[in-house]
Image (cartoon, rainbow, N blue to C red; front, side):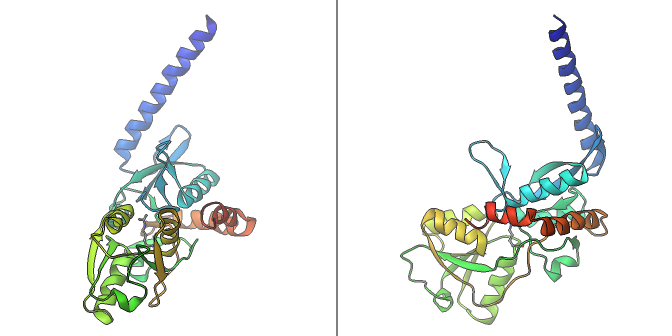
Length: 261
Ligand code: ARG
């Protein structure tokens, strides 16, 4: 009898607690309001980018390098994480309007973005690749001229493709889409000829879906970093933990687990 009472009391507390979280959260506008004794940090991401962030089809949970990385950091700093999944192209404005407290989304710390947001120290560096079907006649950069190249909206690859079109391949056609897997679908369906992607992500798709590809011989992009609204005090807190992770091997452990297969 007593046990049931305890259980139902606990349930009531849990519901009250969740309700409190809900209200504090909706009134805080993505701020750092207390929920219980842990503060909630709202993270923006575009969960379409394995192995950095994606949704596990079986469990429906967010998984990936960035997810583990930020969970670890939040844990060390005593924060609770809440993930807000959106299109990559909307992340910078979500930061600017402070709808999220930070963004971890395989985002490259470019000088252009540094004008509107602050970045942590870099945690990973890849490069770019062009992904094609295995039997494609596109084998090199020059072969792309006259072909249709898919890019994700708002990414440095979209910018990069425009630059390639301007400087080198005047007849390149560019198809921007919202989600990275859509690009791969379009490639498989033959509606675009190649996809321009982050190298780490590209290699994953190539291996998993039996595709082909080659490195971008043009520019190399800056490394990935966590982004914050300008002036956020979180930058320093996050950097401290990131430095620690570089020293104590935690970062390497994550790289081994998610990036080097
Ligand atoms: N690194 C590239 C950039 O910063 C692409 C990132 C795309 N991320 C994603 N989660 N879809 O523009």
